[in-house]
Length: 386
Image (tube, rainbow, N blue to C red; front, top):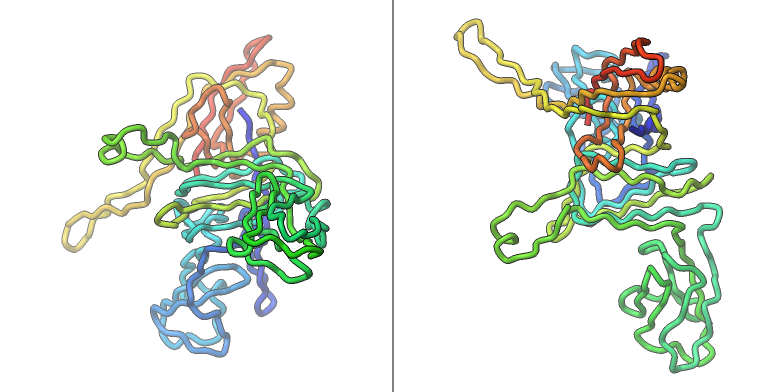
């Protein structure tokens, strides 16, 4: 089994000498296609009443007022006056411990992630039609002012010096005048070929600015396509709920661009997104059991003696029997010691082919009995948080 210890970042804000922090997964440098809630930012000079919402922008968090005539009370400082209502829409997918099961929702979302010295990205609890992953080497990009060719009044096709052009990154110029994509020209991103609607005039200088990708992957949001009329209209369409891209090229200074196509409806939902480097845990799984444990509770009303169900949702629990060699004892113990109790992306072996076992989770318990001179056998419980 392999695992990724997700990269995280800390959001912080200081008020009246006290610093308040929240830890989130590594955030994208740019996000498009996502709209955050429109509540006002907290104003220390304003007066708030019961049920009003504010945003503390430094923490990307919404707070709901629980009292009347509240003035000068910083929301994170007083839980009796303010309830933490969770992250804004764009940061729900980056939540480590809060709002488990929540999703960032948008339309044809595009994310640019800092991806230096990483090789894995994990997406859990997602809904999309198609995903384009483009790895950009920042030491080679962007390309500016590349001379593409000279018009002769007849030729309409020209070739850029690189292939795998990053989607929508190019600007094409004819005699220093920017051309309009899909009107004045079209581009084949894979080959880098430009085709003009009208041939550039004789002697016209054609130049280009663009970015190109070192690696490109396309992932379908559906496990299988429909192959019959009956299947299309009457069968459930199976969708991928998680995508783990591993063995991405390791670069010292890179950006990973993720373009989500929401299909005909345009809607994209992302539960969690994590990045990092995959490591081998040194264990072999066998007899693994994936279970779903519901955390809902039945609450009794002491006055009416009626009951109601409080829905808290469910978590995935992976109960695994593992085996590892005696010489690996120290290495395994070190790795488990580093990650126990922390959120980690666990990746089953490719031969397992059970994508639902892929989980962002934490190790609840891990015993290491020394009772065999050759191999150790033990069990572990991995509790999902996404």
